[in-house]
Amino acid sequence: MAEMTAPPTAYPEPYPASRTKALESLLVEKGLLTTDHIDAIVRRFEQDIGPLKGAKVVARAWVDPAFRARLLADGASAIMELGLDRGAPLVVLENTPGVHNVVVCTLCSCYPWSVLGLPPTWYKSPAYRSRVVIEPRAVLREFGLTLPETTEIRVWDSSSDLRYMVLPERPAGTEAMTEADLATLVTRDAMIGVAIAHAPARGAAAGTD
Amino acid sequence: MNGVHDLGGMHGFGPIEREENEPKYHAAWEARAHALASSANGFYTIDESRSGIERMDPVAYLAASYYERWLATLETNLVEKGILTREEIAARHALYAADPARPVPRNDDPIATERAIARRRGSQPADIDPPLPRFAVGAAVMTRNLHPVGHTRLPRYARGKRCAIVAVRGRMIFPDTHFDGREGAWQWAYTVRFAARELWGDAAEPNGSVHLDVWEEYLDPA
Figure 1 (cartoon, rainbow over the protein chains, first blue to last red):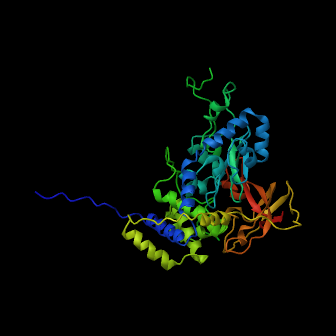
Figure 2: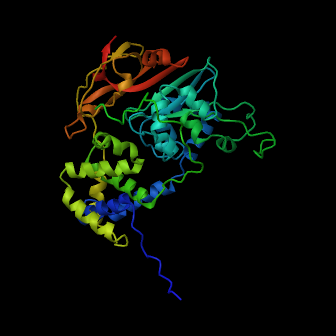
Figure 3: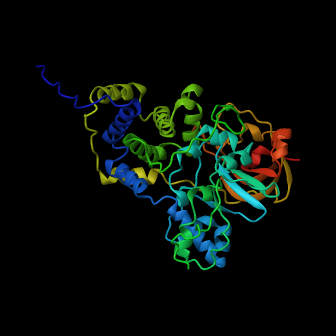
């Protein structure tokens, strides 16, 4: 009876994994970076609550007109009122019945990290970056959003240090909802502008009845 | 540069593929490379970082994942700044490729940490008497038909096109001179609005516009 072969203890790693180790080891050996510093940044990204930050910002803007005005005037300062880090200069784009905004970065992948966290892969993909500037309506339909031709579609190509976030319209029928419940209606995609916010489906437990 | 990274308006990339419940990272090295590039970017500017990605081989650029691009520009910039050499990176990489279990050394020197953090702080415009913006909100302007071989933030689809100033955004470092280590000049930056038809002609969808942030040097009066 043949002896069982022991499984290999280590598989070869993909190139970028070993390349990353090579760069880190050289930089920390030379004292140019420290392990503490790199670890702290990893933790910060891993613990980041992502689009929940932006959802809180939107819900506050829906219930507090004075906050909404401050947010539209200076997004980075206004989000600090909710305990968020200031981050990059933030321009908040208000959707209205006649105007729908959608955000992209055609040249790289600029994204409003201070409110949305790390971008999804599709946002960074050549397909999204190439198409949304030339055929935004087709892209929105692919995301399940069909808007009437009477609605102007404004595409914002993030080419400078400014970051853009969409303030979706508050859905009808949510007048009785609390700020915390409203935040649950705000998706990442609605704050990029490839979706809108919806009222909870009838019968859903939203704590409003 | 007229690079493959300048994707706006290109055809042929197909449907937008989405991943439900996407994790923050798809591999452990991505988090490490991301943090490494974030903490090392005090050695180079954001425009130098972008330029390093734009100068990737175009086939490699399209094949690379987002974090592979970060890793590529990290390495390019560290070499170009004389911080590491290609040879020492290759030699060290050979050790880790041969032995994935080989540990990465630690360095927790608090003074080095302070230095690394201080390096990342951005600069501020120093002019005592800054110039006034050349254009006001509502002004009709035209983007210049520029094709620099170096870094620029004026995408091809938006060159030589009529647009209007919708916001004056303050002064920002001019990316076209900030990519190769030269001290960037601070320039007024604006947001401009293009009618979709101005950019795409008959192919434009109805009732659309594209907004773009531009530096003063990209613009002429219309």
